[in-house]
Amino acid sequence: MPRILLADDDLTQLHLQQQVLEAAGHQVDVAPTPSLTLRHVMRSAPDLVIMDLRFPDGSALPDAREGLLLIRRIRELGCHAPVIVLSGWPDDLHGQPEEGMVSHVMVKPVKMRVLLAAIGELVG
Image 1 (cartoon, rainbow, N blue to C red):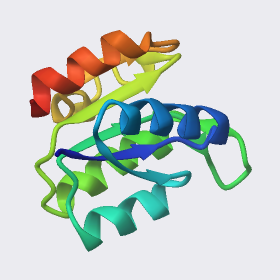
Image 2: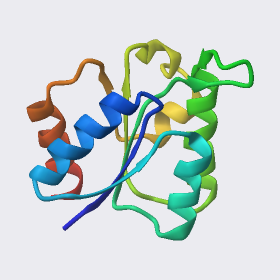
Image 3: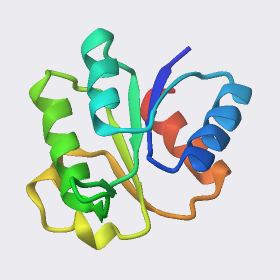
């Protein structure tokens, strides 16, 4: 069973996605911050990362640079798992070097059946 790491600062979305993915038979770890996401990756690399792009910056404002940095750090740690970015602002990633480090960019809100199909495509 694939192990999925969900990273999103919206706790409601995080837990809703966790419930749906677990009901679909996946093992799911959750991380509401980039630092917790990296701890999960360092402890045991997941089979798939699903993450938001905008996380609060030092001023507590949503900032896509936090997500871009998270993508780079995941790769720098040697994690080669596919990454799906779920974002309401996909243009924040478009044209950035990190765009080439992810498998899919999906615009929020994402229908769960569409997300499950993408997961199946990436990790079976």
